[in-house]
Image 1 (cartoon, rainbow, N blue to C red):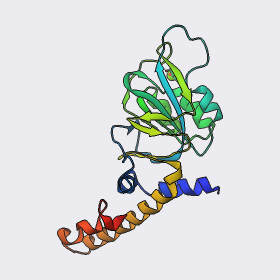
Image 2 (cartoon, rainbow, N blue to C red; image 1 turned 30 degrees about the vertical axis):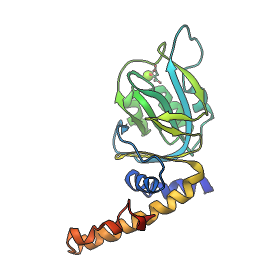
Image 3 (cartoon, rainbow, N blue to C red; image 1 turned 120 degrees about the vertical axis):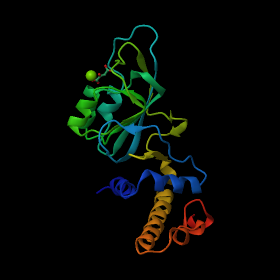
Length: 221
Ligand SMILES: O=C([O-])CC(=O)C(=O)O
Ligand SMILES: [Mg+2]
């Protein structure tokens, strides 16, 4: 297992809420909602491979958007597509799901809409998006950049940043802070597990769930 794989596996044992709390405690942008799994309840972690889209003006006859980035992507990657939150046109589809699956890519988070959800579901390929829409990107969108920092709902995602997406939302952890945020999130998860165990054992909720023990307080940093 590579160091990257084991880092991602440790993040995968957590969830977006706990990692969001660890980001909050460091003054980093917390997680965000509104980006939902388009089928099922997958949880996915990966290193961001970024692509930015923009409206197409004029003619475009080349390769489909996203395809060059997907062709270079691999099994530790999670694609992050920036399309400014647009939901009137698809920024992800079924053939690109096939292409990404073939490369072993872990999934995609798109700040926009997707189509061909059935194909993604049949492939077991996780797609997180803001909406579903049947309208093709062809003739409507073009690729502005690949491998550059992008905005995901106003949060900057750089290539190689750690992204965790689950049914609760999406968190982005800057690569250079990943080890520190991971350790803090693991401590928070342990704390919460201890509180839950007390509640199950009959400790009254107001006693078990005190400020000093929860995220957002000095004790948890
Ligand atoms: O035309 C599009 O927007 C892309 C598409 O459906 C696919 O990848 O299958
Ligand atoms: Mg299609």
